[in-house]
Image 1 (cartoon, rainbow over the protein chains, first blue to last red):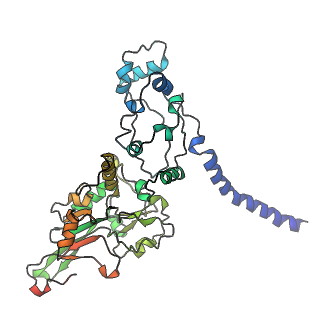
Image 2 (image 1 turned 120 degrees about the vertical axis):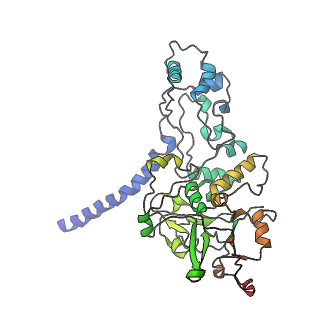
Image 3 (image 1 turned 90 degrees about the vertical axis):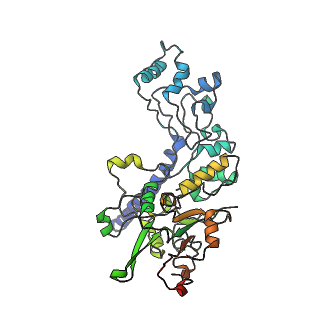
Length: 176
Length: 242
């Protein structure tokens, strides 16, 4: 009995050990995929719905360089203060934090939401000028109280969209 | 028309000052080569200036030849890559896809010009130079191959700007490589060989001093050299190319 049991046990253990990396890789892409991440807590709970839906501001009012440069840009506090200089902060802890940060000259350490893979150069300007809406990649940010990543934004996602729109799929367009 | 990027290097203008080498290191985040790394023969120089002597001591002449990647049309480095990490762009550039490279080094073995470099070590810069790195260029980590890209970040940037500016075609002189830009004697000229009006095409089409290094291999390099004019050379030597 033991003569059979030992090789069988050995085989089972070996199979389990070999399966670990495979399972780990699959689990990594499933559970840790960018879209499966919970929404990040920001130092100031910035309400996109209020600014976009209620006040009717355009994305590029704050993300100023989206249509002209590679990076869309996170606005400096000065830009928030265009309006918030005259908006009362009493009993509004988020606004108090904003004004205090501005007065003390401390920048807000926003948490990065959209995770692109490494070694890729993405240019916002090209995509906006090709006629894409911000929402195509970023999702309905105007309805998100806490912004989370909407699309996968990994290479398969990029390539699929580039093929649909007859954009270049040459490696050197993004990887250099 | 799709451009075909190419370069003309006039050896009669080259003084061997190495400004191109320094400009390239700075532009492309090439790690600093220390003496120890040179002694290991593991220095990374996307463009190097080779020096050789002609003649015997009293009548000796120093000759210089800057050697970037030739961006061969039939590049010998490309078919040997098992993971397609090196390939030809439609614009005639031999590109290295760093994140695809697994570091077999077959390509550098198959390159006759020795212009492919392997990162044997993690690249390091002194603390004071950390903000000097070019954000438009990936820093290559240990274990991948790297090489001259004809400053593709500048080409892509110029092409993007041209597209944003009413989708107009690129103008000659809008794209320049770091080495060509830094060259004080304008020995290096970079441009689109497919555009007959570009400076590089005009030189390449009219010169009688042109030759390509190791042209006999039939790889059709995109870099054309212009032979040094030697006033002491006998006249019948004129048509002979190196």
